[in-house]
Amino acid sequence: MIDSSSPRTEFAAYEVQATRWNSPAGQAAAGGDWCDVVAVDEGILALTVGDVSGHGESAAATMDLLRAIIVEAVQAGPRAPSTILATANSQAYNGGEGIIATAIVGFLDQRRRTFTFASAGHPPPLVFSGSRHAFLSHSPGDLPLGIFPLHHAAVYALALPPDVLLTLYTDGVTEHKRNLLTGERELARACRHAYERPDLDAAHCIAEHVFRTGRGSDDAAVLAVRTWPSAARFPASDASRSVGAIAPGDSRWSPR
Image (cartoon, rainbow, N blue to C red; front, side, top):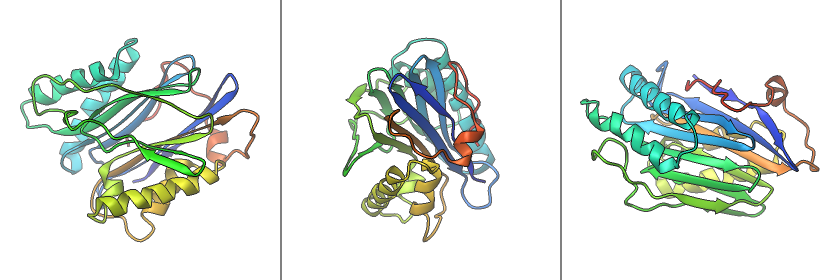
């Protein structure tokens, strides 16, 4: 199953379009990966992506629970992304089922053009702008959820250029060929193509390029956020025209 959503919102002199792609492994109806966007305040979007170990219905049930905890914590009011991950970690650790998950929680501030995030052992976000790209690596101490009773992830803050593609993803994207370096190069090339075609659904475009020679055997998800100056008008895709702007508190996107 492939899921893609493309709402567009506008704030001040900038436009933002967030898209997602989520596909369980094989023929499974559901998987353990999630990706979500929630508008929490004027000009601020909360982004989260995660990966529960395992496949199938059991992983999907755990994913539903952790995702719901994170979205609820995001909507409860201003909190550091590390605090939100700590809340999810409590559930993962105390669940009594050996739950292990990686995740990222971040806040995109359109007014200040910043991205502030914390990671629980998750693959690093990729930022693409112009001819440059960078993976936002994090500390080895930012451990996955469910390992220790307390979770203390570092918080990272990045100033973004006005015209940028920010991509969050799960390891089913970069490790589908069992070679991380090759997977990261493929992802960077796919992001370049999506960056150069802002009229397309970026998440679907990225996934299509990465998996053009094979899907792999793991759950996979992509969350892509494209920003650009409002003066730089691009043709809207059918998907972006069909879904209106997102409002604060809106969590319309289901995880699969």
